[in-house]
Amino acid sequence: MREALDRVGGKWSIGILIAASTGPIRFTELERRVEGISRRMLTLTLRNLERDGLLVRHVHATVPPRVEYTATPMARELYESLVALTRWAERHRDAISAARAAYDREHPVAKPTQSV
Image 1 (cartoon, rainbow, N blue to C red):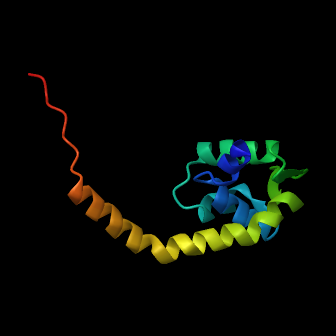
Image 2 (cartoon, rainbow, N blue to C red; image 1 turned 180 degrees about the vertical axis):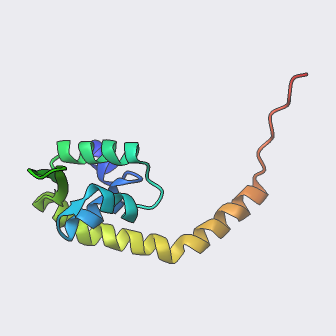
């Protein structure tokens, strides 16, 4: 169970699965929609999601080849939960940042000493 949750709850997986759940999507469109992801990380995450049965990769015989990704029924079942999770995170982003700042003020971390 933990392995499955780690995959769908991964830093980049949620955005990819949400984007792919609304219909076929190309690599370059995913790259634009998943803010901050590198090409390499997008490629690795897509491969893992495909391996786990959450995405299907379609290669169209065109020049150059056109590749699209589509969420499987199993991934589409997650769609509402993932959207709810991202909305929750957006609503509470400021409160979480404030809580972290308050915690850090109350629990200062000792800085490592430098060797001369």
